[in-house]
Amino acid sequence: MNIFKLPPMNPSLQSSLSKLKFALGLNPIVEHRDNIGRFIPEPYKAVVLIQADFELAWAWRFSRNFPDSFGESEKIGLLERDNIPQIIHLCDKYNIPVTWATVGHLFLERCSVTNGFIHPEIKRLPYFENKFWKYSKNDWFDSDPGTDVHKSPAWYCPDLIELIMQAKAKHEIGCHTFSHIDCRDEICPPEVLESELEACRDLADKKGIILRSFVHPAHTIGNLKTLVKFGYTNYRTSYSKLLGYPIFHSEGIWELKNTTDFTWRKQWSADYHVYRYCKIIERAIKNRSVCVFWFHPSLDKEFIQYVMPGIFEFLDNNKDSLKVLTSGEYVDFLNNTTQN
Image 1 (cartoon, rainbow, N blue to C red):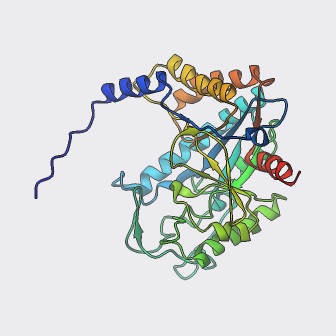
Image 2 (image 1 turned 120 degrees about the vertical axis):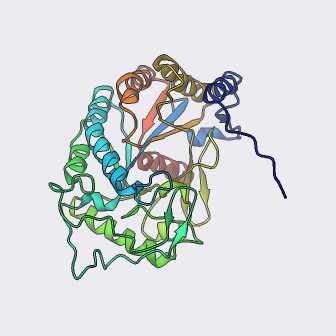
Image 3 (image 1 turned 180 degrees about the vertical axis):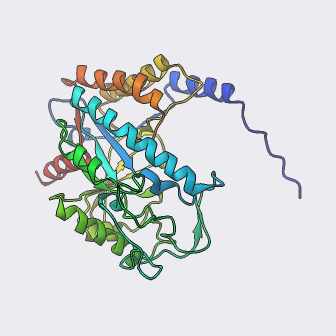
């Protein structure tokens, strides 16, 4: 049977429709709920959370979009390395804390291959496919160079983690699994995620870091009971773009709902980027909402240079109306409010 498929939408038309939906207030969706005071600390009118999915090369190894996924992973990882000091500088300038959801392998100074096998302590996922990746042969850690931060800086970065920890802005280090795995229940057996989280916890302990905030790689939501078992208090979902409120699940963990991502869109001017993100924040203040931004630190340099300063300055200028918190800080507030 022949199924008629529409051709891909022209990027300019898609951009215009996106702007129209935004102007009409259709994106992001504004959630309405009773008793919203328990979600917003007094005397503020909104909460803003900013999360960075901190991955370097690890996120792109099995990408469906790259014929040479290893080579592209290296390029993206090195771009992220170059970007992070600039992002940290902007955070310090405007006192903006970020939750850095960090791939655990990045804590390592080095690792090595023994008898052709690397990280034997980490249990392996079965072969799988999803929207973003295809893992169908060989070993999950084949891309791991098994060297050190000096020889393979796209795969290790204890130096950047130290930079984040020593920054003027009080950031949070969170978790993004040890090796950027698919966490869905139907793909990831609990024992696989447990082995990943054990490795992350051990590495974080050495730096005096307690991991509480979790971000599932590629939005592969699952294994919530395992997260709670390891002391995680919150995770982010990306089911829809909205200004809303968190949900406490029966497993004992808070779901933080995504509002939108920081990304550079070539069809938009820098001024429109700044206008749009600041307008979202204004809507959060007006509606007494929680606004959750996230980004990949490997994002285009144009965004860091021309857009991020405008967003951060707007947040700083409106600090009497909104509170920018790390995810862990916000969940501490939620738990205290619930108990009281």
